[in-house]
Image (cartoon, rainbow, N blue to C red; front, side):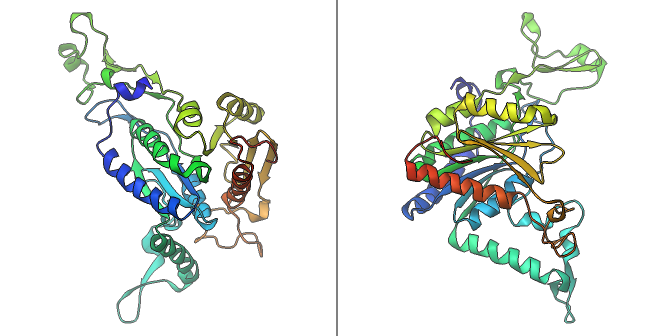
Length: 350
């Protein structure tokens, strides 16, 4: 793929690769399924020494929540996530409506303890986290830029090939559609001063093409290239025996099903999970070669908050459900069918 010849290898990749290989070898030897869950948004730097960048709104809620349910289903999880986005288990107290310190208080002896009202919920989360640590079933690998994401995805896919059909890719990260190629990126901070820029015009000497992001008078002009479509490469070359799940986010309900079907046909993978921006937390559309299926939480089972710790019960006596608690079992069932049939493309059931 030409992209990797022309854009720099991340400095963190070698260390992360070695850590991941050790993790994968452990679980391959134990016959355990391994899910690579990608999560959070990717940034697009406008300068090599980055001050300005393009970002998206993803906090990583879907990925972090799903990772927990994959772990509960017996998978080991490689969590490839945007740095500082939500993490499995920690997400329960890393949200905007409460500071994690709100869960703590002082005991009569002056020590710091969890407040009585949070003991049960926090204890349950802590037990699951400690079990994942003890069993070494959760590996956290961070990225920030879209370039780091693509390099890590390819490397991890190659490392997971020995797992064969026991490997699964759950591509929940919000990957940028456009980027600035390395050879068109300015080295230093783009100056906003019109007078200063009239004296310094990087990249334009001798008629050369200006940098992708540059000032023209008082305007910042950004000329982005499309990010290569990596999904087809993942399906056909990087992870040909793995189960691969992608996501399709739309804002127009009339387009969602058609766009999900189109993606499934174009990339020939196993499952597209379609969701609408306004309703993504309580309904999704599963589209596979075997058919289509909506998962919709009843209104009285939907949480009004980001975390179960804050709203353990919502709507009277009805326990809150997270949509990922329904998504992951459906995926596990499809994955089992794929493994048992020895067929890289699921044909029955959705």
